[in-house]
Image (tube, rainbow over all chains, first blue to last red; front, side):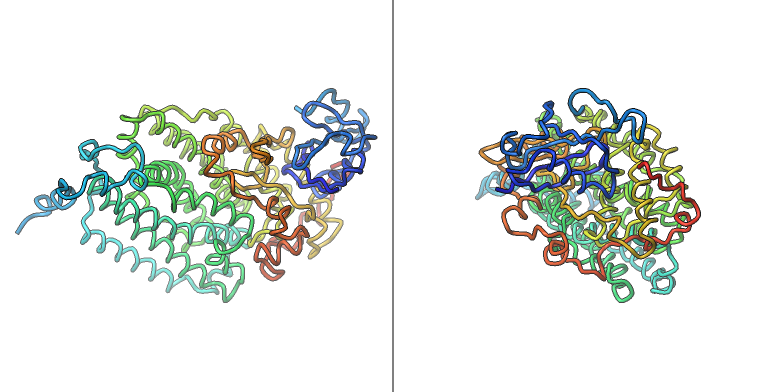
Length: 96
Length: 498
């Protein structure tokens, strides 16, 4: 089943409509959302997905994570502390 | 023969007591507005212009003659084609969003011309309706006429008849503000907030920019409209004065609601023009500086003079001055085929100007422009798709605009589950407006809702063509088609790390 979600990538300017299957993993959801924002934002080696204050396990499926239609999810890009957009690296906790 | 001073006060204040129907029947609350008050409560209503019909016609004729003369002298295609392409995009944006919105304002004024509660109010509203008719006709005459040269000017008339996402947002605003509001809400929302509070951004700020870029025709168009607006905007003050006296909570609610809605509209329409589409060499002040001068100072004083408070979300508004229109513009640039005007990619000089004008926020926005610029450099001139998004964006269930509020680091969008449907709002004020009157807004579907319901295509290209009313000749492109000298000469403009 397709699940439409409101996706927000930290550092981006606009919310994106992401369509994923409920069998997709959170990791795949992260890649889909990152690709959608790639025109404005560079991809990062590590992507974290949050639902509210809770980070979702990248191995979980969309269904197992309990995501339902039109929920908000947030994507945080992370770089190793010494490279790239390091200001977003090693960010503990949930999206602000 | 009676002098003007003898007959005009009598003619303007020609109210009488009804003998065979009640006042409530003549002015039903559902149409005349709440709170319903007997005429005695309104009879002190007055405005400073006190124009007679004869005076109105004479002055309007003079304005028309002046504009016609200027059009004859400098309004031809060969004059317009000399103007900067970015600036012309600002003109197209304004022409589309204002021309038929002014026509909707005719309806709002005519309702007040019949159901306003004092004769002087009704007379002023009659002139207001005539004004707005003129404000519809002028851009259609002066700007839609340019469609022979540039098909994007077709949107001067076409815009409100399409399902383009900006048009859906504009209709959502205009339908409520101008077509359905009762005369009391109309007076407060349109005359006091929208016209008194915000339109000086257009008629003074943008008009000055038009002069600087050499667009004399657009300058005069704005100034000519402004002289009408200055008069009929005066309807707002005496209505608000009475409302504050009898129902201050409703007065404050209307201010809070319409200030936010008006702000979002002007941030997009005027913010784009002032900070991105006006050529850099002609910019003196930023959009934020114009807002600070015309809204933060003047409108704030008026609010306080009426004994009202600043809207409860004032800190949010102040913060959005640094972010909102920048976030919408960056999003619009990367979805420019979804609009009917071209967008300018800001180069190093523009980014430096923006960083100087917006020191609190631009460090968060600049990496996005560097990323887009780098992709444009890689793609080369005339390639649009590499700097264009393909995934549909999402829209607010109140303002219907893209979810671009807050900051890049913390988008302020929020969702609300209500009666089995999940709504999304760009900001806390939009959610607050929705929740105060859910019966008014709940049934409306934003673009995403229409896509998911199968009413609009999910494929972006198909959405643009068959739903937004655009085709390749007219949809927005990069204003320079990606051929910026700075992209060739300054490789550092786009950092690989972005």
